[in-house]
Image 1 (cartoon, rainbow, N blue to C red):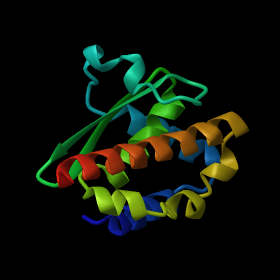
Image 2 (cartoon, one colour; image 1 turned 30 degrees about the horizontal axis):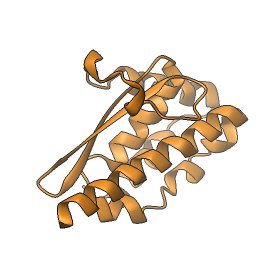
Image 3 (cartoon, rainbow, N blue to C red; image 1 turned 180 degrees about the vertical axis):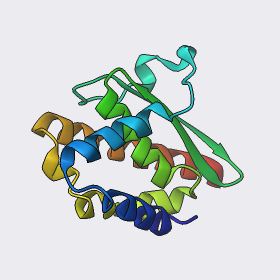
Length: 141
C-alpha cells in the first residue's frame, strides 16, 4: 500500500470519531498495537531528540524498503509514532523522503497537541526522513 493510500485509510478512520477524546483514545490503542520493541535497542543513538517523552526509533532496510520499529514511555506519543510507522514503514526511502504526510493536517492532529508534543511529532518525522536519506545513500554505493 502506498503512503497516500495509508493516509486515506487513516483519515477515514478518524472521521468515524466525533470528538477528540475518542480520537486520543484511538491513538493510544494504536500505540498499544505496536510490536514489542527490543530492549537492547533502547539506546541513546535511537532516541529521538526534542521529544517531551522518550521515543526510540529503529530503522532497517530490506529489499529496497525502510522498516521502522519504535517505542515510547508515553502512551499518546507511542500512538503518534505508531501512526507514522503505519504510513512510512515498508516504503522505499525516496517515497519517505518526499512524503508530505498531509493526513496529519487533515485529521487535525497537530491542532490538538500541546506545543511540546507538536515539536516532538516534527522531530519524529524529521528523524524518519533522515534515516531514509541515510539508508538510501548507503545502498546507492
